[in-house]
Length: 386
Image 1 (cartoon, helix red, strand yellow):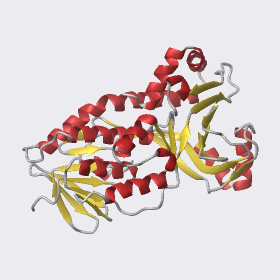
Image 2 (cartoon, helix red, strand yellow):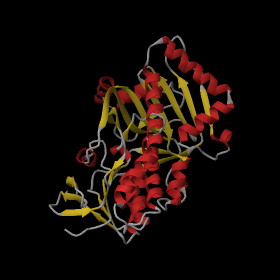
Image 3 (cartoon, one colour):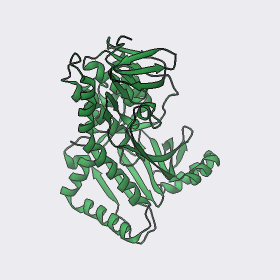
Image 4 (cartoon, helix red, strand yellow):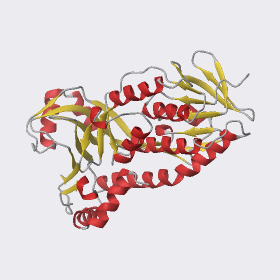
């Protein structure tokens, strides 16, 4: 079979869209397998480096036309533990930044990415899924959901937590499930958040309100899955009462403006993110609890590094795709390990009942509160600054 394209991107989510655009912009003949799915009604808090990448890559224009700025992060220890952390406020002005990042509706991001994709003549989108993948010395053979076959040198897996590309490509994945889940929904508050994201830390996880413009807010509430299922099943009136209690009524009345959805929490990590002409981006390579806004930010750093590797590639040279996958894996290793360790430590520190760990966490927040240099390091780590 003759080569159908230089690269195939599998997965129609935001990471897959961004990857398809990046690869096509590098000059490769690209096929994007993007089966239509339900609209993603969630939002994504993207830190400034991610926003800068999106703008530089031509994926969005002015962020104010798509999302809402995040200039402050307020952390409130709402536990009754013996060692409680102080209320802590991080302000982007301390770092000389107009904002830490922006809160974007995923629907609007997808529309912007799709508009960028449509402008690239060397990028073909196919509304079908991947059925199977088989790698050989000659290339990678893909059988698609519509029965057709493609042979290509480079495959990018952006097909999510249950990635077929990851499994068929022989990547070893480590997965751990938590008893906690995340409940997300859209709210209307009695008083606006402004541009401050507010995190109430409870024993089973944070209750976070993210500003979405005006009096609107996006809620991410992490707790035991059984608790969240019970509250969700009790109906909107009960949820409203719980939200008022959890938010300590700091923002007045609360109204649900969209149904609440539940997402079980887990972690997935891989030993390496690229090999043998196959690379993994987004949740195909890493899954974390929604702590520290790292999910899509890390996925976009995947795409940025892939774009950097592709910038000098010569698709006429033998074995170029294998070289790309190996170089990509090397570039991503440090960031994936560092971010994974950070998110895991943060999440477990919120859940632990051990007094030494509680004391360490409270002391850490006190240090962040009173030591500007340490706070600056926390800014850089949380924002994914290189």
